[in-house]
Image 1 (tube, rainbow, N blue to C red):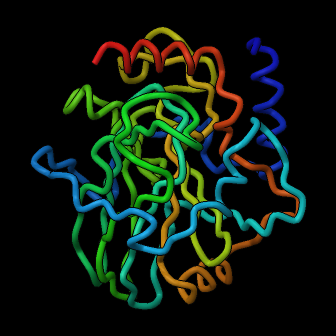
Image 2 (image 1 turned 90 degrees about the vertical axis):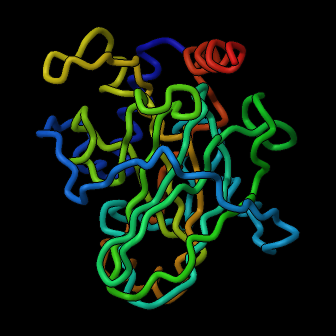
Length: 280
């Protein structure tokens, strides 16, 4: 895919989703939650679909060709930095798919009436039927982990450590709160669907196709495609909480763009996957 094609698709993406807040705005870097990644965390128990009865199939429709609109999909765009629970619920997180070369890690943070944080997935990499790209067979589609009871009045935030499995403490960390990201860009998008929350991340530092050193931070731009397909998960926060979030949000038009552009992986994405995974 040429840079011009990628640019045009990305422009269509922005138009269809009525602007991802803060996507290109440069802001001062700060973590409003004071989140700290704990390298001593270990992988919690991963439950397969036969154990949880979670059905990932309806969500795989969002893992498809880049910039494909889904007429009457029933998606509702949400603010990923405003995932506030109104009611108590035993929260779980399910792996849907990934289109990354990096072996990413995902953690959560709960603040408010419930204060706790922890690792969700230590190595987000899947291989086999339904997986987009080959890699280690760490996760299977629909695998899930339990966060546990989160009481009403709590705020949930999620944090991606980009290639953290390989890079450890030197990896970039991107949160659902744009202001916490070093590049000042949005790295997560969220939609309500079928009484669940779909959450997807972009794992590369910097703006669309940006290269070289970011003069504001001294960090290396990574030629990001800004496709938000690098980690795709579903949050089970309970039907009542999802409806409360929808009620507090402005729904997207009936024709909603699928932001999970996993199916049509760019040549750059394929290249960096080969480089990253074959080196381990």
